[in-house]
Image 1 (cartoon, rainbow, N blue to C red):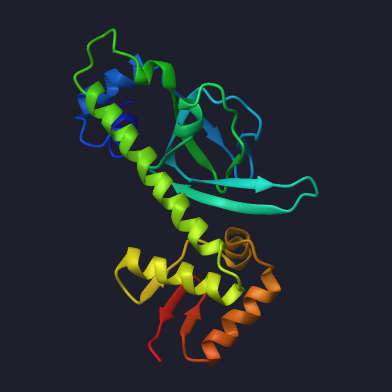
Image 2 (image 1 turned 90 degrees about the vertical axis):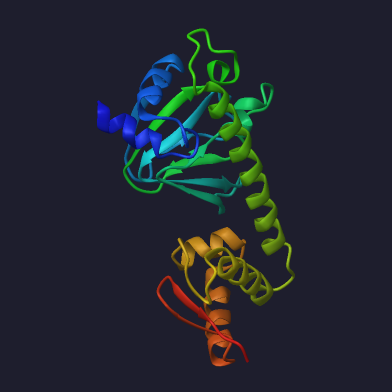
Length: 221
């Protein structure tokens, strides 16, 4: 079991909390692990969320799907990330997105009521855990704002430039790796894949970028 707690210790919610306290806190917070296979739904839109999910291994996408089945990727969560905090904290709101395992994933669920309430067992790390929770929610609000900045652009090229520029700033390099394949990138930017692929090749021809799979090189004219 020690390896399990060491894995949890490295996640964003338990950041800075010693492993010996993490073991105690997971029990205190009614922690439960579950395995999901690739493409399996973790939470469906419309469900009331009362837990925070922590990805111990694997990857989860938040997806929006309209009445006709058209899908958009809202965001990606990888090992070490948590998800569901905002909807778990909003007691009267339901999850508006599907949470789907992109690959085989192991997820630890923590009860939000126990997480945000005074600890009955006097966990020494509980205050830090709440601080980490607030920091995580704030970070995700900023990331959502960044995405809105990308997709509100008028043209596919402008959306691509905004997204790639943002990744270059984040990765502090003109050579970047993105977490999406072409269809996923189109879904994330809310554009049609064929049109996006054509625009990428036009941008390459115009000397703005080069790319090979998920690696992109941003160039100055």
